[in-house]
Length: 234
Ligand code: ADP
Image (cartoon, rainbow, N blue to C red; front, side, top):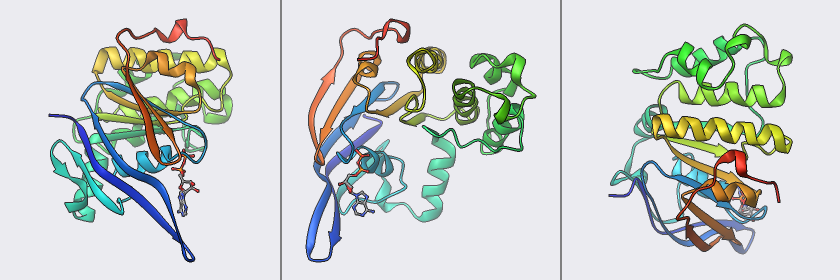
């Protein structure tokens, strides 16, 4: 059984008299424990796909299943529980709370879970031991993203959604973030779904989904997966 299954999914926006397809008849399966990279130019439908998988948005047509449960059939309450219990999110813009320390920001994630991982373990896992009591303004971009990763992962989610996780970072820092994700994946086997413009990141994925104009134009299953450290920004 796949973790996610999409059957004939379309997302249609009606602008005046014109219909536009953000996604058009998508079929897709995502396996548990994979690193999936979704690649494509701006406007190709990547965020729409992410929003449908995470239950933030609903398809105009077709079905989205998580572990054989159709997301469209869930009540709002069930969808909230689904996001709270199973999903973690990180974004290009970190979204940290400015007046909370590193540790307190990570505790926000802990409060969302009934069976959180240890805060100290998460801080260690993302390499921020000596920064636990600092505030976001005292951190570099890469360090802030590592706080966001720890905050998303402390609740031990089954799936981590990463929307342009290295988009605001230079190559060296970006690769450190990817190395952190790689280490976390090795340790916790979290399914990771990473949206990016950066084709270099695709080399570390088990599955690469290339999108264009609302379509999946190619799905590649990598036989060998590159280490984050070996990547070179194209
Ligand atoms: P990407 O994440 O790849 O940049 P998006 O999923 O954000 O692409 O957008 C796909 C297409 O859907 C784009 O053409 C975008 O303009 C359109 N779109 C997204 N959201 C809306 C909306 N709320 N209303 C109308 N069109 C939208």
